[in-house]
Length: 228
Image 1 (cartoon, helix red, strand yellow):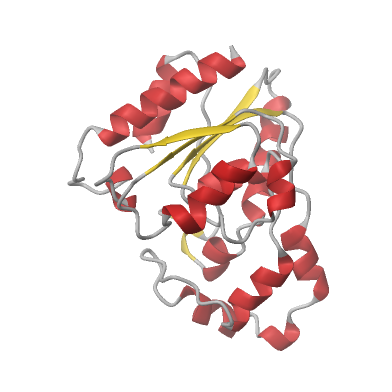
Image 2 (cartoon, helix red, strand yellow; image 1 turned 180 degrees about the vertical axis):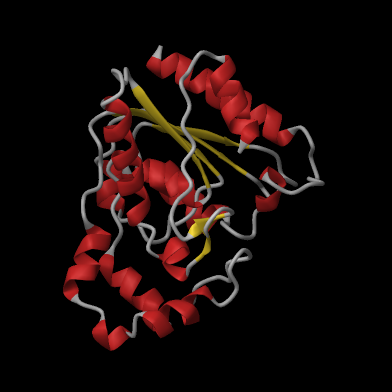
């Protein structure tokens, strides 16, 4: 994520990048790290609490790529629909393959059989995870758009900037980006390019080698405008 961290740092922001448990290169992968997405906003709030004990935070902005973009929106008020989540877990609604973790849903079912899933778990997924310290959100190739409720998106009040790739088949525009863009009243956004794929934001040889530089600068400009 250096392409995103560097321009933010150069713009004068204090930047923290999280390694979420179960989904990072240090500790490895677990299915919960990809599918228990509601844990991620809690990770950020936990980190903010720790940082606030060191020194005053100042205005907080959250930028995220893919699942991180959902995380950013959740911290501004986006909430998961438990009925849709249950349909995904039971296979009623097919889950697109996760390139980094093929078979993630099957692995999750083995660890957590559906007959042992409780209402408490679904309630946790649908909880309000917003953090009042978050003043602005920047989403890049956002995911989970098909699982969030339009009502929760309509309640978002902080500025939201969105960028997406026109050739993204992992988080397709109509499924994952459009809900954020159309239902968040404060959202503005634009395509990063018609040929930009999801993995062009991290692939060694992206189709457009300038996309990460451009989007990173746009994120810095966005936060300078809205956070000062």
